[in-house]
Length: 531
Image 1 (cartoon, one colour):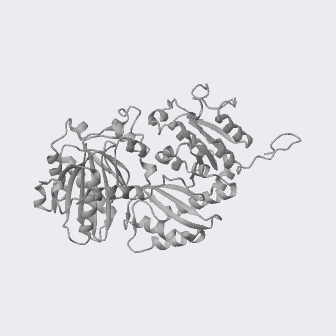
Image 2: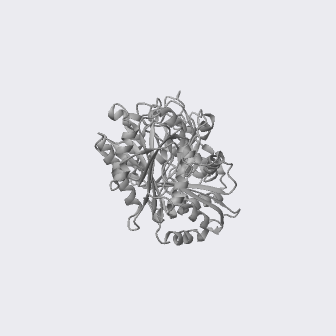
Image 3: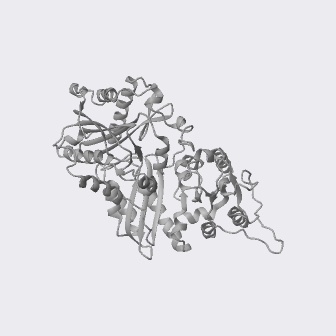
């Protein structure tokens, strides 16, 4: 195996090298290779991620931080010279699964860290290596036939403020000041060892474990990438084309066309997202796009499925999906056919609700379904007997902000939400902090609550999905807007119940969907509910 150390350069250039080497390895023109490098500031997206859900592109544009789309799957990273990156091309035995190969790579990296004096590391599947619950390295992969590309990034140190400013991915590991909470969730080589060893020494330890059977691999050869004509881009136009490539795939930042619906579904392997445009009657799927921070084999499986579902009548979508999933050698890490089917059903369910209630794009986008057994939105609304409201939706001057209940004084939209719930005899809880949410859901589960309505930002729903999953109850959640804690980078304060800004409830959306919650029958002679 050839081992190279290419030094620091633009991420766009390094990404172009990875793409060229990958193509040459696929056709047998390049031997197995391990390449170390570092990048100037950039954002690195997984191959199937949706741009506007992962990056603060306005911040990137203002600070001239480019973004690239990796060949490999997985989540988004902020890269700079304080991270040591590598790309390893391996010829893989067909009998070895992609998941096994990724785990073996993780073990090799952990062995190298042990040699550097960093012990007690664990592989937190599917992407992270952690020590004492704190991430120190991230790994990704892509496979085609017998060619496997493994990529990694090791935290030598970290620029926390810039990382948080670039990434839109919910990240409770970064507090408002970018320091305290990071110590609880991220750790670096510098923090563990007191200093950063020579880069070549780190590369040497990694090469010994990543290439254990190749004696020649221990001799790391340093190169100036701009002098290696066989690998470096030949013109600046190549780098520019790569930058454009990253903005043309799964880019949903444009104004959404009419009859377009989005849905998401959280799986152990990562978050899946879908966006589809339907005809005016909602019967034909004109265009489908499916993405996520996941790993698949073949690598283009999700784009292939997206193309196969586009242009089909809605009743044929699940049939075509099953056909594609049953193709030979399909491997999806941490999710399966049922997860994609659930994603499609949620998409079609939101489309149905939109048609029935004549919902706007804005209202439809604000709806998040947690339907563990495939319950439809109509079924959840029919059975909902509880409403959960976040304390941050109450004004900070309100004496009820950190208390359960609401006087319905008419000075904010929370009172309107309470009134809408009261009209349907729903029990309302103001959720004060994350632990309060967990306790409340546990209480509702014990009381055999059939379903509930809630409000939270989509970032919270994604990041804290386990709380909703463990409760096991179906829920319809409405996204909140305005000054939410993720946009203001104050999520740790919010989890602790100390967030001071005010989020905005979409009362218009709530009014539209709560219409499907039945009002209790009232005996007007006695003015009592007979139940």
